Length: 179
Image (cartoon, rainbow, N blue to C red; front, side, top):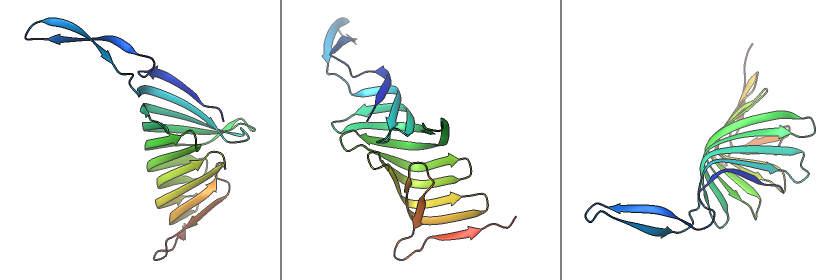
């Protein structure tokens, strides 16, 4: 597993340059701040186990937690490292990366764009070490001649092998378009 985090870090070391101005006495005092866990403009690079797939994740801001990173305002580009091309890209509201478990949980709506498919998924999980993508909630896949709707999604990270299912009271279905 290779992880690259770059950006403006507000969480490194002890930070003591904060000055508070007290308007009543007009006295400046220096306060020691605890190391913050907030980061801005994050760039995170993740690879699958055999390093054939690369996920380039950008986030507006993130908070470092004991388990990993909690990120807001997500844009991800996914590349096939063997063929040297982008496979798909997507955007989401939030993501949580658990570095120990190697799981990236993406909260939506998640909008994935690939060459021939457009996927809208409520929530998406990438199991990095198993190279499996799972989705739950409202799932819509728009293809060139079809629309698939379901409640659960499972596929490989290249999106070449995808299965969609419903829940017990609501089945997944496909609508073919007439051209």
